[in-house]
Amino acid sequence: MSDLNGKVALVTGAASGIGLEIARHLATQGAAVAIADLNLDGAQAAAEALKAQGHQAMAVAMDVTSEEQVNKGVADVIAALGGVDILVSNAGIQIVNPIENYNYADWKKMLAIHLDGAFLTTKAVLPYMYENGADGKPRGGVVIYTGSVHSHEASPLKSAYVTAKHGLLGLSRTLAKEGGKKNVKSYVVCPGFVRTPLVDKQIPEQAKELGISEDEVISRVMLGNTVDGIFTTVEDVAATVGFLAAYPTAAMTGQSFIVSHGWHMK
Ligand code: NAD
Image (tube, rainbow, N blue to C red; front, side, top):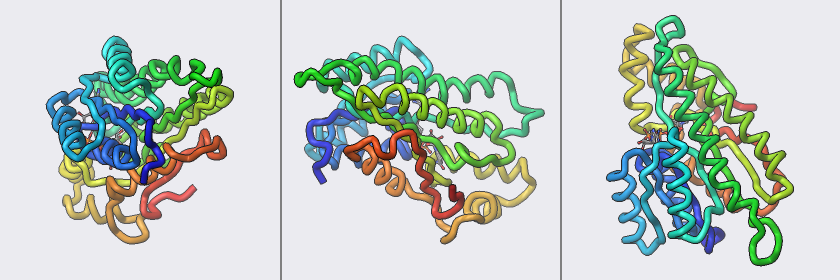
C-alpha cells in the first residue's frame, strides 16, 4: 500500500501497544511518521526500527498534558518532516477503582492525559492544516482519536476512563464541523480489549476489585460479549486507522468506529 506517500503522521503514545502498531501501519502505507511519547527511549527504538526498514521516522519526547511540550514537539515535527497531515491522538493510561474510592488526583490525571492531551495536540496541528498550501487552498488533514468501546459503553471501576473516552466524541464531532471547510476530517476509533501493557496491568486489579479470578476477568469481563471470544488486536485497530487516514472524502467525518469483535454494536 502506498496511499499515504508524501504524508506526515504524528502518533502520540506510539512507543507501545496500539500506538506503536498504528505508527508501523501508517509507515507501511507510505507516511513519514513521528513517534511521540513520554517514554523517549521507547519512541527512539520504535523510530530506529522503522528507519531500518526504509521508512522515514523520528522520535519526539512529549508529555501530551504539557502545552509547552506538545507545541514544541509539533513544531519539531513540522521542521523535520515538513508538516503534519495526520494526527493520531492515542496516548492513554488506565486507573481502575470504584467511584467512592477514586482519588481526585487520579481522576484529574486521567482527564488530563486523555482529554487535555487530545485538545492540546489537536490545537497544535490545526494552524498547519488550516493554512493554505501551494495551490492556495487549505492543506487540510485528518485527526484520529483513540477512543474505546468505553466511548459508548460503561463498565464498573472506570469512571474517569469512560468519562474521558465519551468526551473524545464531543471533541471529534466539534472538530469535524469546525474543520470541514478547511478540509480537516476527524474520527474516533473505538477498540474493544486489546492485549497491551495497559490491559495486562488491569487484569489482576480487576480480579481483586471484583472478587473473581484473573481467568474470569478475561473470559467474562473482557471477552464475554465478543462474538468469537478473542481479543481485538493492535493490527485490527491500526488497519482501521490506516483506512480512515487515507479515506479521500469527508463522507464519514465526525463518526466513531467500533473495533471490538462484536462486543459493542452501535
Ligand atoms: P500502552 O500502555 O501499551 O501504551 C500507551 C502509551 O502511551 C505508552 O507508550 C505510554 O508511555 C504513553 N503515554 C502515557 N501517558 C502519556 C503522556 N502523558 N504523554 C505521552 N505519552 C503517554 O496502552 P495501549 O493499550 O496501547 O493504549 C493506547 C490507547 O488505546 C489509549 O488511549 C487507550 O485508552 C486506548 N485503548 C486501549 C484499549 C486496550 O484494550 N488496550 C482498548 C481501547 C482503547
